[in-house]
Each structure stands twice: as structure tokens, then as C-alpha cells.
Image 1 (cartoon, rainbow, N blue to C red):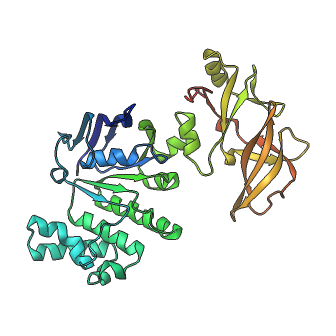
Image 2 (cartoon, helix red, strand yellow):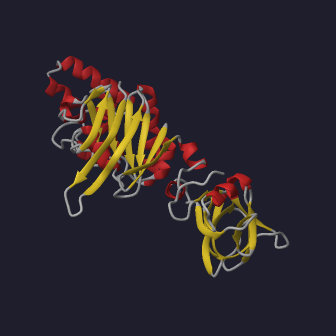
Image 3 (tube, rainbow, N blue to C red):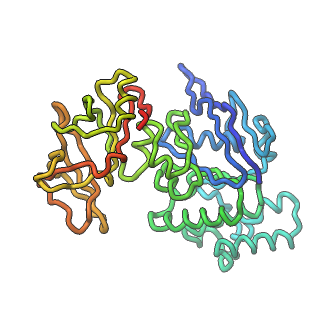
Length: 366
């Protein structure tokens, strides 16, 4: 096992202007930690992983594994094992041969290879498939074989690049739970790349959010959800996404649909310190509630209802200034409003309000 660190590491692709795919990434991954790199397409997460694997150059800065600078060390000298999206199994080899091939190349004796493969196969519920070829396996089974091939090598670090992307939704949920449990059992430092924030939130000890090659925030899933560092993280983490709207500011709070939502003194002071007349107001769908028509709230016309079983997502337009803005509210799935119905929406808990700078997106203290 080993800790990993990116020290202002950058990958710059030539062009006019040059493209900084990863821009001065500084990140510490503890020994035995499961860290997830997440971000939209083009955020630099896979490039960052490939830099660690030695498959991409590090143009600036350094990368350390186990306290050793591996910036210029070839991939085979880094003691890492990588699991790809595409499985990359040899079609002419059996499951057992695929899993033990790296050990065979190292010159490990047959008896030891057999023992290690058998142990990994038992861990991954692959014992009865050891004599099969990959074409006789399902997608989930092939992914487990790719995992087994990495496990038998007993590396210091596991690197996983969107390994579940080719699986159907049900199998993806099942397999991500298996990977998380397996990592906890093995205790191997793992860095996992995904574009799926639900996957990131349910698997990682910590999650690092990237955008345009720049690290936005790295923290526990709970901290990212409760206290996003900026509007991008706020909108990216959470499903469905946080409602983020730029609204006018008064001396008492944020003005939405003719009503003023009270804000804490610290929030108002932070906005005042930045000389702001408006703020980006953030509230999660589950922090909003439908209220009776006689109570104070924002008027919303229901435009879409997504029934999800236990709950439902209600989409509708709320007037802010001279324009209408779409809000999403999570409600009880047994009694959702109907399409076209006029409802009133209120903030359930003022402590759930998030405020951000309307231009920089940085969090305002609250």
C-alpha cells in the first residue's frame, strides 16, 4: 500500500493556445484511501489518472507514490494496476489465464499463480467461470475478471477509469457496491474516475471535483453536499441538481417572486462585504416544500411531474424579477400535484440556503 500525491501537476497539450488539460493539480491521497475523481466530460479527470499511471506526461510539477517521485518512472515501475472501461481481456485466454497473465510475465511459478487466481476468483465469485473464455461471460462478469487481474498483482495502488460505464443501470449499482466493499476489505489505495456524481458520492471516502482541469473541491461526500465551495460544485453534486438562481438582495434577504426569503446575518454581511446587490441563491429540491395557498411562498405553475415511487420531482416556473425561472421541488410521491396546477413553494429550512458570488461563483459564508 502507498500514499499518492499530485504536486502542482499539469498536463499541457500543444495548440494555439495550449490546452491545460490538468492545471496545477495538488492532491494528497492517504494510504488505503478510496478517492474518486469526478467531473463532466473534458474536466481532466481521466488525464489526471493517466498521468499517475505513467500513460500521460507530466509537463509541470510532480507525482509521488509511496513518498517516491515517479514523475519520470515508466508505468511498469510504478507498482500500480489499472482497470479500464473496456475490460481489455485477451479473448483467446480463459478467465484463469487472463487473471494470472501478469504474474506469468513476472516469472511467478505456476503453483503460486494458481493459488492467487483461486483466491481472487473466490473473492469475486468467479470460481465456476475460471475455465471459460471472455465471450462466454456477461459484461458484469468480464468486469470482475478485469478486477481480479488487478487484484492478483497485489499493487500499491489501484487505478480505475470509468470501469462501470459499459454496464446496465441495475448491474452498475450492484457492482459499485461490490467494488467499495472489496476495496475496504483489501485496504489498497484506490483512485477511481467517473462522470457519475451518484457513483462518486456512494463509493468514495473523499471525492475530488474537477472542472476544466482545475480542482474545485476535495472533501467527503457529506461535506460536498452540505457545504459546496462554489456554485459549480453545488450544481454538480446532488441528484437532482441544486436550484441555482441569481436573485436581487435586500437588507433582509433574497427577493424571489415578490417575497423576501430571510438570510442569516453572516450571509448578509458576506454579501455586503462584496458590495453585492444580487447573489446566486442555491436551494436543493428536498429543502423546498409545497405549502397551503394561504401561507407565504413563491407561486409556481407545475410544468412537469416526475413520479419516482417514494417521492416525486415537481418542475415549475417561478417569477424572479422580469423573468420566469425553473425550480424543482421534491415532494411525497403519493400526493404529487397535477400538471398545470398552481402551487405555493416555500423554503423548508433557512439553514439549507446556499449563497454564491454571482460572478466568481465562490461561496459566500453562511
